[in-house]
Image 1 (cartoon, helix red, strand yellow):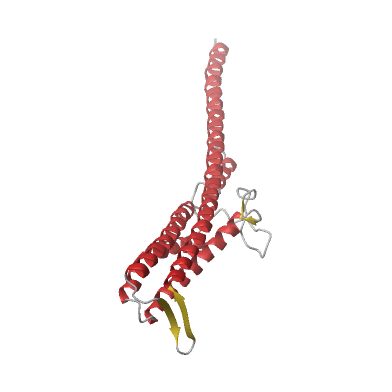
Image 2 (image 1 turned 90 degrees about the vertical axis):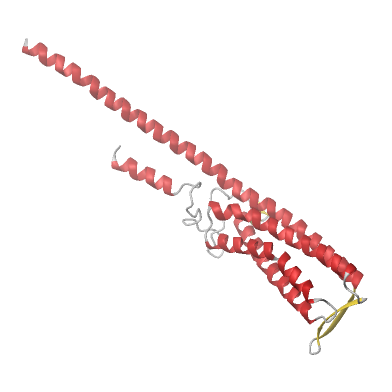
Length: 242
């Protein structure tokens, strides 16, 4: 195999979609010099109008924001005198899957590879699981263990906010349903994004293997022709000697 063919194959292997190299390393997109689209994902979109990579980055940012908001709300419940301390402890334990999913998003932000793309599905599932469990925990706690008729939280400086138990439970379930529906759609976006790279990667591997096999066959044909020429040259030499 000549040096040019060898270097070409190495370059194709390095740019292979199925590998761990970042597919966006050499691609510059349209807006703000953000790398949000490649030839493999240019036909895919999020919410019908955004590039799918841009949509995934937005989903990750929303997940980070949701994690911070939930943690602040849970710790803020320590200021409510009528709420037991173990309510906060249980809520924090239920937030563990969400925190792990947030770490998966940070890993995806740092490096877009096959491994990080595969974890997006798990991260979104962890978000849905945490939100649903928190809604169930809020409903059970405020119906079974909370003795007051109103949920009052706040500080003397900022003021107090009052809600009845039914209102608090209703809004907890309502918000959990909205978040679960949104993240279920985000789950489809993540699966589509990962599937696009798997499909393109498989096609590239097939084309590369076919190229390699054709080059090997050409090389074998050349070697066979050279071997066939050697006996003929020897026969001609013997005839000339006679």
